[in-house]
Image 1: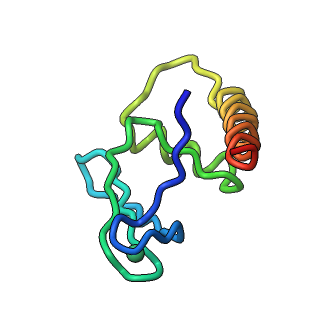
Image 2: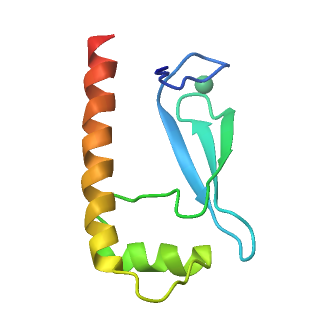
Length: 102
Ligand SMILES: [Zn+2]
């Protein structure tokens, strides 16, 4: 396992702003900008359904499925949403505990 708190390569700040960029037909992309000096820090391309936005609820989850083009009949989206929420919250808590232990 590797754990890395992202920092600005220009000024060393770890205060980053994540800008989610969405464009029809393209995978979602995140641009990270330093909040202290404004420099471009990093960009990421999100995998389909790779984005979980905590606290946004089931409607937001359905929209992400719609955007990803993932339509399969007979899926229990509500259960998928609940599982995803529980997994993401548990994973986030583990990551934060490991960052604190560093
Ligand atoms: Zn900076």
